[in-house]
Length: 294
Image (cartoon, rainbow, N blue to C red; front, side, top):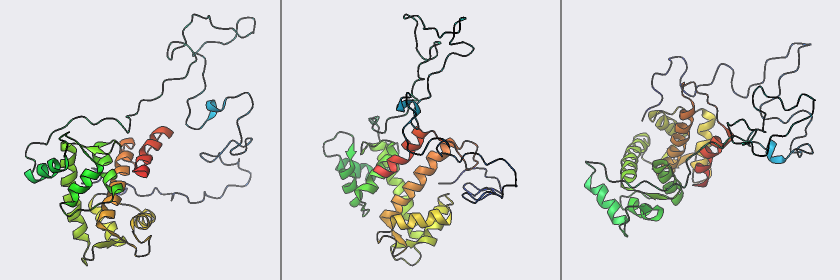
């Protein structure tokens, strides 16, 4: 597992730009115009959280909602006499047909879409096949979260249901908490790889890795996180609530899934490998929420 290919030698993926994020802006010259409105701040004349101006429906201005209707390009809403004109009743108002209706909502894959039936890839280890088939008691070709939890525990890999849900989401890209043979095979081999990485960086064989070892483990997977992000990860995945400043194997898997999953989603938007990306409100929510509700 590696990071972005062909990284520029002087600007690695995820490295900060010359101006640190969150740093105060340079001093404003005396007499210069005021700086632009901060991103996401409310309009100066409208108090934050106040209802929209009267006469305007709330949905027309809600954050992330569709833009208001607009007249066709180069057309005038006024007649030659200066009075607004109504379109004929039989005139269509479909999007793109000259009307002023809302554009269609962008299509996103449903997080609860059904899985496409799959089969074991050629050359799959017979032990992996036997593990899956033993868990698939009803012979449906799919196993649910509890069945997979039991299947993995038979190989001395005990995980919480939250970790199992994250594993299933990562390898199926759905939240239905079921997995088929092909996805289970990829999951099983990935766990073997992550187990080897954990044991390699657990130098004192304590069954835990501290923040420094976690940083090195993530680097080996191709993810260079900042010290601030590293502290947040350790605090989140430390079972003692941050007291021991170390994480165990099952939480290490959950941590890796979170970092890898969010990074992969980010990279889809960062086509130029710049370390920056633009998300719509909808795509941002659909990127983050699956990791919160697993």
